[in-house]
Image 1 (tube, rainbow, N blue to C red):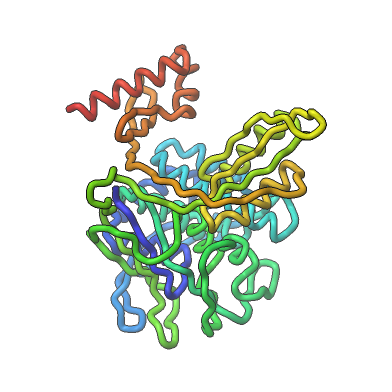
Image 2: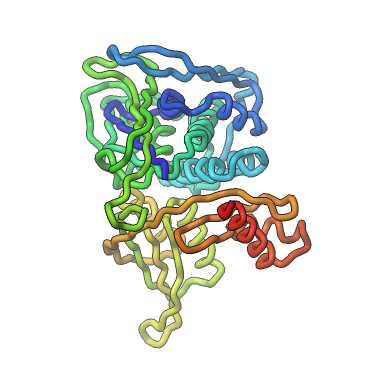
Length: 394
């Protein structure tokens, strides 16, 4: 599988993330074509060569017509925008939804409102939408399956936002990077922006040194200004993931499980809780029936989480269930190599995950296609998996 690792020694911003991937070989025409499927007008992008601190890099220039950028967008607005873009690659769409979904949870926590009530300001502007969705399209252009990152550099002082003067790093940045290894610097500029932090929170599997890989490309995305003492760039290293000798292809992760016992929550709320947890970045979430004290019927709500997302997921778990506490313990997960391909079932697109021993059609795609084809969901899944096997056999 292709892996990308962002080296955030000078922080990360949305335009730097996209520029770094373009510098590493992502196709700008593919990115532009994907962005053109969105119901957005009044924008254009181009990439130019520049230097930062003597280091050659690519700078992304997003031009926006102010007349077309007056809409105040909510999470629901952006979700609808992504869902209606039928030409957007499915993996890119899902990644963008992860980024903006996590951002909605973080902004809601900062401002004391629900994620659905959040009004995006700077991060809902056309340029931020281009940065986030363009980054997801660039990852698709490079066929990146897993994204990793280094510890993240942050600035100091204050920055000005839509709500006036704010501390640097901004509250949304701190919220998004809860559990992520960070370090402060003496730079009095916003090294890591909310858009950059949202990309990390939504896309990165784990944070640390460069993971084992066979390097195939590297790129440098330029920030807007020069910095004193360091090049203002975001480095990305792209390569093929290296598997241990004699082991199944895959990678090991140290993860955390959060658990809460609840005996006063309805089934509808529990099902909604699982959806909220998945949207907030959980790797998995599930419910187990239990018999609690005094013979009460209860459920154990469990969440599988990456360490850097524990704070956000813990808030979602306690907020949605009303639980007064939860347990936390560490687990080791070994994720086998897998890939995802798209097949057609009687003209309907269905994505199929392929692992070492199984083909598995995506339920959501099958459920969407089933009424259109007049077939049971299981029959659509069977046809999709057979089509995937035929593709892999030849």
